[in-house]
Length: 173
Image (tube, rainbow, N blue to C red; front, side, top):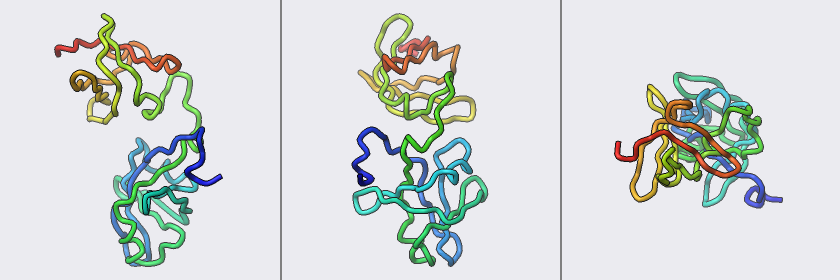
């Protein structure tokens, strides 16, 4: 089966190749993960090039500042690295370890319906982002809502089977 034919698995974008690093084909990586070094544990990576995902092996990598630097197989010099700049990095959901019973991957929550305790449907969770204080859900429905993802205070329950997140949130806020 080819990369695009894995019907029961979801490809998740986990970062982006940012820029060449040095002259020997290394690249800076902007990871989209809480712990950047965890991205180095997944192999292979899939790069979105020429309108399709292509597997690539990470030969070496390490933390560098707030991101990573990596050497990819077949990327031998600065020109090769420059050609990959701006490319998304993906891994398949099956490559991730299972989440603990009380934890969720953000990708599991995207698309879920968000409902207030009073029963008002706010819309669907479009994406989440981090702030210094807490994570924020971007919910799109009749309008767009920015709802703090604070378990116990705002987020009352997450039902993965029903695909519903219940929140204690005033939509007029």
